[in-house]
Length: 241
Image (tube, rainbow, N blue to C red; front, side, top):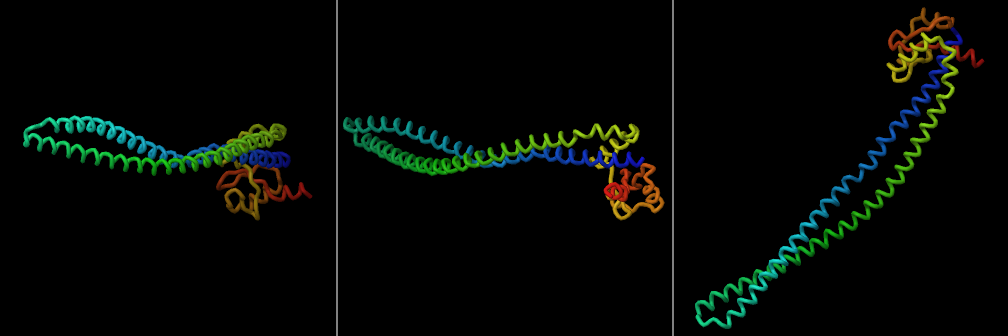
């Protein structure tokens, strides 16, 4: 049983190392997603600004089209003024001409306002576009590094597990099943050392009678609280000695 306990402890070391590496590798996709999503706000803001600019350009086109139409009317009205004999009709048409001129002036002023707003927003768009491109380039570099790190961790996890089969052969299949079941239930940690008379998995004090039994190295002892398999610290000390 002594050799089985040592094999269980060795198997746990292998599985713990592989588990840690695998967990780190599996955490990387979320890091990549968070990095790539960090610029979504900037992209959304740019989209809003571009939509505003497009709306302003449409308004400018509509005003210019109306101005062209009003300009044609204004020319016709001014031409008709020379042919009108009736003072009342002349006065009425003069008012129409004056109103048309005012409307054209107001429209031209609005066009200038719109052009100013377009220019202002376009400058912001240009600045934010450059900032976004710089951010995308920086994040692209980080993402590539993370993908390389993920590949490295996966390779290390596979390498860490290479000696597992040889160690498994030293353990009874029934005990190995118990080990695997415990590892699945206890976040990958099925075998622990005692530490000053306590289970290092949950810090529960081990009963004196059980500690005595453990030091004989003749049985598989499990913690009464967390049910992990316990290996007495003296076993490793003796092996190292």
